[in-house]
Length: 189
Image (cartoon, rainbow, N blue to C red):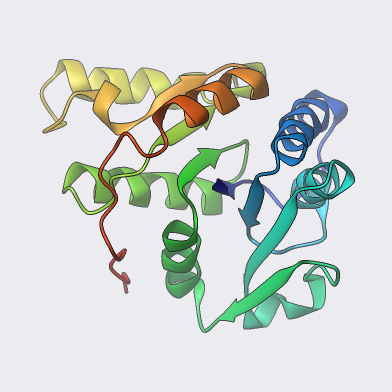
């Protein structure tokens, strides 16, 4: 299974790096491929190191202006023209998506994949890994949108929430292949 992971490239505390490493090691141990932003910095590096240390494959998808931070030992590295193309490639290469703690770039990525799912343009599982309650506010907002009728699909059809890496991987292994995956993810401008 190839898992596209959206997450921070920032240097974070052990509060976030430890759970990220644990998830990454589980991915690697089970022979899965990490599809990620390709950076060899911050939380992205922690996850890539964990997958690599346990025998998993690394597929990086970066963007030209971030080339100097790209991981050199990735099994595969692609450089997109811009961030929109990068998102589309990340979504297209994974059998599922896991969203880990991140900043506005990660928030942009998760809202885009939810919008695609809402319109039936992305049929693969999406798991929000709520490390240390990082996404509690977002989850409350999404539930509020659902309760108030702002989501055309029930929230449970858009994403799963996991508190631990083990729970996230269990959800992935249970649901990958169970949802209909469209042949291509549209490139957004």
